[in-house]
Image 1: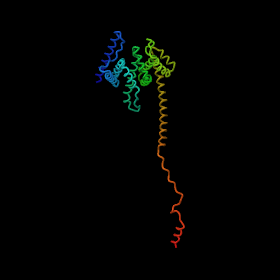
Image 2 (image 1 turned 180 degrees about the vertical axis):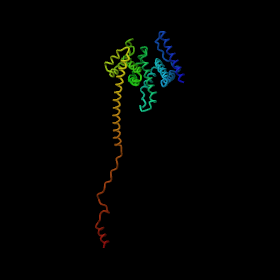
Image 3 (image 1 turned 60 degrees about the horizontal axis):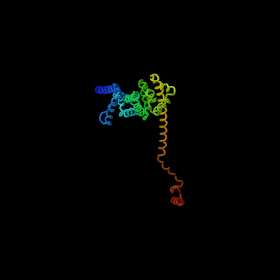
Image 4 (image 1 turned 45 degrees about the vertical axis):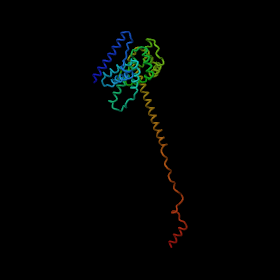
Length: 294
C-alpha cells in the first residue's frame, strides 16, 4: 500500500515540477499550482485531504512527498488559504499530555513538524511579488509568526535544518519578500507587526544583524533560534505560574462559595429554666404526702 501511494505521489510531484519548468521556459512565472478536478470546493477538499493524509504516514518518504505536494498546491490561489489555515490549525492544536505514551505523541509531533515545514516552504518559495504579498497578508491574518515560534520549539534539539528554516521564514515575514529586489509595495503594516515582535524577542543587536543579512548564515539563524526558544521557555514559566495562581485562587473562591451555600443548621433547643410540675412540690402535695404517712 505504501509503495503504491509513494509511486503515485512521486509521479504527481514530478509532473507538477515538469509543468512548472515548461511554463518557466516559455517565459511564464514558473509557478503552476495543483489544479483540482471537479467542482472547486469538493475537488479542493479531496486533494488536500489526500495530501494531508500523507503527512500522517510513519514512512518518511511519504511524509516528504506530502510536504512537497502541499507546498506546490499552495501555489494555486484556490488552495493557498486552505493549506495555510490547515497547517496553522494543526500547529495550534493542543498536544496530548506529556504523561501519555510517547508512542502516541510521536505521530502528532511529526504531523505538526511537517505542517511547520510546509509553512516555511510557502514563505521562502520564490513566488511572484503579487502572490508573495498575498501569502504575507494571509499569515498576518492568522498571526502566523506566533505559531511559527511553536514550530521552532518542536524543532529544538531534534531538527536543526527546521530551526534554521523557521528563523529565515520569520525574517522574510519581518522584512517582506522581494522588497529590496523589486521595490514592490508590500504592505508595511504587516511586516512591521512581525518585525516589532521579533525585535522585542531577540533584542536590537541580534535583530539588526538578522535583518541586514542576505543570505542568512546558519550560525546566525541558530543564535536567533536559541534566544527565541529561551524567551518561549520564560513565557511558559510565567504562564504556568499565573495558571497555578489562578487555579489556587479559583479553588479558594469555590470553597468560600460552597461554605456560603451550605444550609444553616437549626438552632439548638434552649433548656427551660422554669421547673416542671414534677420538679415542684406544692403545699397540697406536701399535705397529701403527710396524710399518707399518718
